[in-house]
Length: 305
Image 1 (spheres, rainbow, N blue to C red):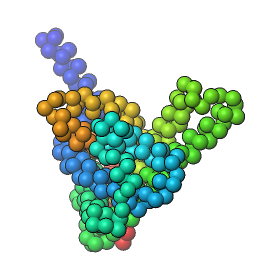
Image 2 (image 1 turned 90 degrees about the vertical axis):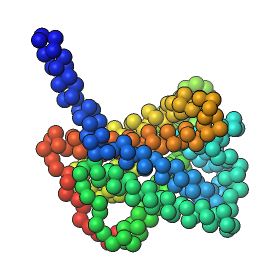
Image 3 (image 1 turned 90 degrees about the horizontal axis):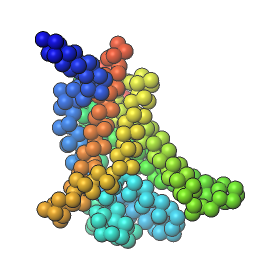
């Protein structure tokens, strides 16, 4: 009996851990299944968004080599395996992106696919997050809801571009400061400082975007103390995935039987991991609020947009 009591006591303590309760809540609310569907839509939305983005702004990017290089690095960091770095292992050839044209049939198809997939991803994300808070689907005029999603998608796209530009500006400013101090910009110190600054910018961006997604897209009234803590934890988790992304995906797609599909499988795994983090973040916020005796089941009042 003594051993059984001790084992039961250990199990009870483990079950009381917050992370365990969050994971259980996610499973009970079908979070893993919802995240899997979300990741499937994300891969199509990202491909269409990149094609349309470069088709529209390709001429500007080509005339600014520094911005071009920073943007490709930014894409490679956020989505490992997406951009071909010359090894032939990436899904997209940068040269083809820079030659993309919006005024042709491929550009028109990509634009239509972007609209449909982006709106579908936002709708799926909204329902997945609201499910973690035990909230029903948003009841609003279908067309007004989609128009609102278009506005939000535009805001997120602008934030993505602004982050890439900010990375260029911060790196240039850092090199200028190091040069003024007499530090070689190609030294290990300069390289690690630039890396740290880049990761800090990505962490800040991921935190803000995740908070906006949970608050605006999902239309849930979340107190700031729960929202920003949860968003920061989620952003940190996504940051760890980005740092370890190449290693994680490399090990997962090393099976020779999957060699022909390794890039696509790697991207699906990546988007699934990120989608799981988004859903887990919502579950963490819900469990944190319940622990504090706060209910988050009062949705934001419906607005036209």
